[in-house]
Amino acid sequence: MSITKEKIHEILLRATEIREHILEMTCRAKSGHPGGSMSMSDIISTLYFYWLKINPKDPSWEDRDYFVLAKGHAAPALYATLAMKGYFPLEQLKTLRQLGSDLQGHPDKHSLSGVEMSTGSLGQGLSVMVGMALALKHDQKTNRVYGLLGDGECQEGQVWEAAMAAAHFHLDNLCIFIDKNGLQIDGATKDVMNIDPLTDKFTSFGWAVFTIDGHNIHEIVSTLEQADRVMDKPVAIIADTVKGKGITFMEHQVCYHGAPITDEQLVKAKAELHVTKGTYL
Amino acid sequence: MTSVAPRDYYGKALVELGKVDPNVFVLDADLSSSTKTGLFAKAFPNRFFNAGIAEQNCIGMAAGLANMGKTVFASSFAMFISGRAWEQIRNTVAYTKLNVKVVATHAGVTVGEDGGTHQAIEDLAIMRPIPSLNVLVPADAIEAAQMVHVMAAEYGPFYLRMSRGASPLVFEGTDYQFKLGKSEVIRQGGDVTIVACGIMVDIALRAAQTLQKQKINVRVINLSSIKPIDEAVLIAAARETGAIVTAEEHSVIGGMGSAVAEVIVKNAPVPMEMLGVEGVFGESGKPDELLEKHHLTVEGLIAKVNLVLARK
Image (cartoon, rainbow over all chains, first blue to last red; front, side, top):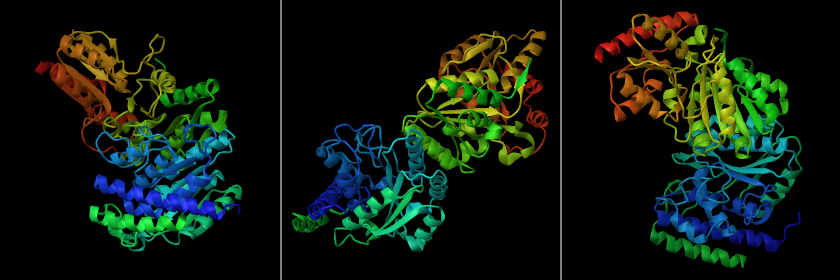
């Protein structure tokens, strides 16, 4: 693995900035989904600030890699990342969820540069990724499709229709993360509707499966490198994550799935993020 | 008049299209031998994907291919592709304005022996309200084939429904050409208008011939572009004939008749009657027996015309 310690620190610093934007955006909007946006921040930071072949100056570059956020409710994480990459001005983040804003509650590909697919209705994103990967294969292109699903999302039957198809069509140009933060609106995923053993499920569906700590940049990068070398099969990276990761009082709390923190809490949260940032500078 | 199942010409048109347009892809959900997409699969195996018995994923994959710039046709029976995959069509295809043409076969009661579980009589009602989605019903196999080419040329999502069986070629030997958003008067008349779609167009023409003997001049409109709808041709018919009967192989709730009523009540209210399936499920039987049972016949249509004329 060739990634330097400095690069890992940069990814972590960007992830912290993403979290700060998520909290500010949802706090200002007085709605949105901070918890599941923060659990995936380290993954999306690694993808956009290190791994994906993309060019924000040329968003429709033919040879780019594609990223589809299947769990569209984590839009704040995607929006913050895209703005930080320069797809649109950071200032626009302030308009999240407001009438007339390009930053819809769930991503709309037609309103915002860098959004590869409109998502939001859970369970549908993986099928779209399969279609995109099929198109790339047909066109003999080497760019790849990456995606991220929620763990609760895997309760949707369509995810398994798509999982079957991805293996059936030998889509080794498709790599997905499962943001396994263990919580969904109504409670713990294992209590609401158990999805485990997730690794066994994807394996039996014909996927190459890796299980990692979704907040360990080193592990994320080395797994992406291994995923690149997998032949003939799609790859699922099951990332154990913490909902609300990065802010002590938000971690593992189901209440921040679909509700923002208060203005007072934001001050406290930003202070904690400031300390975190310091460790990466 | 020659009779052909619209799906036969649909399959052939896909092959013609595939020959001239390498960007066309076709998907099916294990019914390619029935929907006739199998013809395309045989001609262009690299551009055909079978989703298996998984309509939701079929539509999702179609969306993914379209998201990469492909023109995609996705087919299955009307019941399953419109019903099972409704939200996929709504959110992933239409909301995202992707270039996916959902083409449903085996719509309506003429599915026949398979019975009520397989007879979609609600698909127009659930597809019409979806923004950005165009909704088409060909009157015969010739129009079905024309629609394939029109859909390919027109960017955006479509839902097209056709019935299972062979039906008379209404447009055989004519120079008719389907245009999106246009509906043609295919028979002139000034006393009453029948607005029909699908297999009911031929029945409407025959009812009009019979009524002619009673000196009732019936105008017949083929409303094959359900959405966008040709308001002008409907308003003119209401104003000039003063009475409208709609005829469709679909529920009278929310279907083509309702689409016509939405135009008429706003612009030129006249007495209307609707012929269709009266809020009940289908059942097993021979297609003709089922059409008879639901009065989707020349006699049934004439009865509606007489009703509306009495109200005129």
